[in-house]
Image (tube, rainbow, N blue to C red):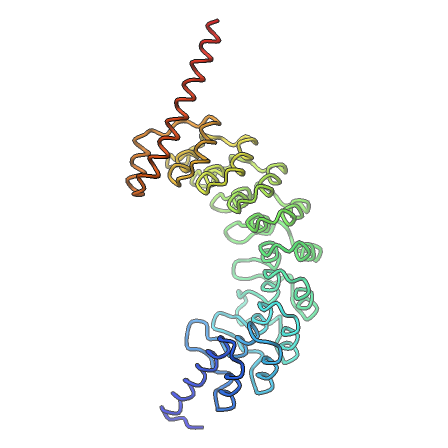
Length: 353
């Protein structure tokens, strides 16, 4: 082999062209390049360092993967980030490709670094039950943890496949296991917005009020997903609607900022404090005004929110440079103030009689 500078450069260019052809879906060109001398196991000189087989395992058909393997592609190659060829095959969602890679020497229990994510974690995150079972049958361990102390159950909960979550729980994984930041499996499930997975975790004993190190509760995560059914379920199972984060942010404040009116209504119906204040003085109403959420503003004012001083609205408008939108917001506040004054006068008249 020509190891001169010119020869190395030619190999580099052929390898680069091979990966580009596979990414473009041009398998015929990829085969031509290999036959012309492209190094089949060439790795990109970047932060990931993928090979042709990895790209094919993720995107190409089974025949192309088989052709590359028959021509010397390494089924046990690994990127600089610890991802293996079998992980790329798992990401494709095609069990035939996963099986083919495994038949050519790949292992699902191999990791260079004990902190790397495992193939089982990838499969659980993707939500493909057949691939999860295949990986388990070929040596994948549910006990494996990554650098964040997470098991495949965390990934399954995030993936939202209830059958995979049930399988992991039945295999003995603990539903209240958390990572170093205190995020539990239920946090992941709530964030996915899958009410069935949340229900299963709660039925298996998950704590609906478990906080992370920063005080973020399961209800915070559920509300951020915008799924009112998950929020309702958590509240029905005892989640505290007024639990604050370490910065004093309540679930209602988050919802007000994001504009989830149906979620805000449910929270208020379950006792959420309409005037809860953060450590920095923010209220649900100020969050709604700052995020330009008129529907939330109306709802909060109708449920007794204290008025935000007009000077604060003007200052927020100045900072956001959104004067037209804030004029409309101020009009809403003014209308609600008039309505509240009318109600107060009416009550006084009734009392006087």
